[in-house]
Image 1 (cartoon, rainbow, N blue to C red):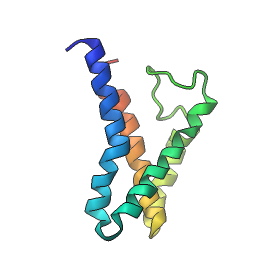
Image 2 (cartoon, helix red, strand yellow):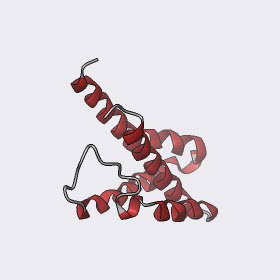
Image 3 (cartoon, rainbow, N blue to C red):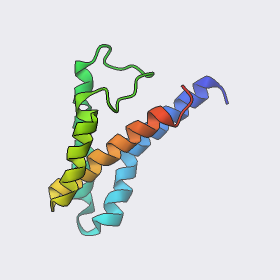
Image 4 (tube, rainbow, N blue to C red):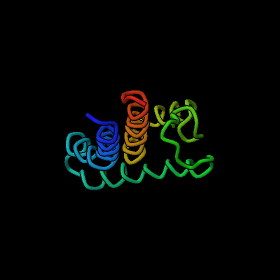
Length: 112
């Protein structure tokens, strides 16, 4: 596999996990309201607005976890605590934590 093919696969996997996989999470855990759950989890993508405060905004060799303030370990701890609330807050917490897991895997799983 060439480096450009690996980069393409990495990009596809990253966005699949961010945009498509939450549908499966919603269907499994929130079957009755899966559309609402999916939209809430999709809304947690707004956490990436913290990238706008970085220079450069996008750096493929930078790990988002621990660098951007909404991707900090303190923020992740808050997202974990939100799991103990009911309703939409819990759905958002699941979306945020899965987002962090996706970003962690994106940086640590692939050859840089």
